[in-house]
Image (tube, rainbow, N blue to C red; front, top):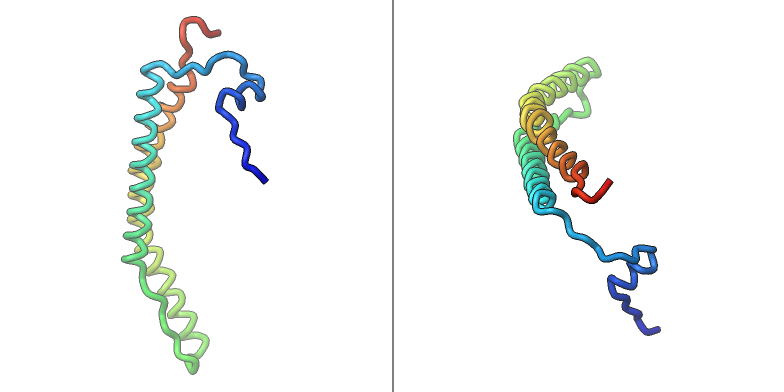
Length: 122
């Protein structure tokens, strides 16, 4: 079977877009670039926080098979407490950097990009 190739104009015509494709304004293109950088920065921050948490996360406790249930329960409760104490600084960093700073900037940029119209549009 021979592979068929279609040009972008053919695809647009078949989809009902007969007019030419217009590029965004300078401000819209700049906004998209800024949004891409802010989104990439947020992704890098999230990946760095997850990687750092994985490095600092407490190791799973080794519980011998002959340990009584009460001691096992205490070991597991201590592990959960230690894990939550280790996770708390990372969640507060995520909240203060990504949620309170980068996400509002990102949504503001995207709101501007998709909310702007040129003079001729209504």
